[in-house]
Length: 82
Image (cartoon, rainbow, N blue to C red; front, side, top):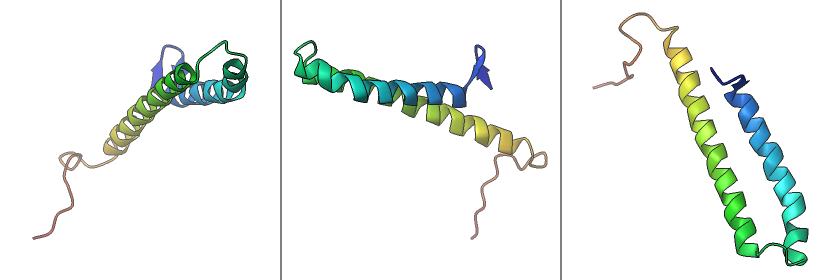
């Protein structure tokens, strides 16, 4: 599944890139007093939340694809034993 022209995996990669950039840049911004530490943590935490959401969407997408390969009627059956 794509969102726009990018797949969920590509979006997750972009978030990872951005998190890396923030980890590299924010400490110097804080040191130079251009950003408060709490502000840096806030923005990094929000980006991590976005990553978590994208991962959950990707997991759900993979589960749906896996269900497509099950025989009709078994897509949502759980393996239970009495």
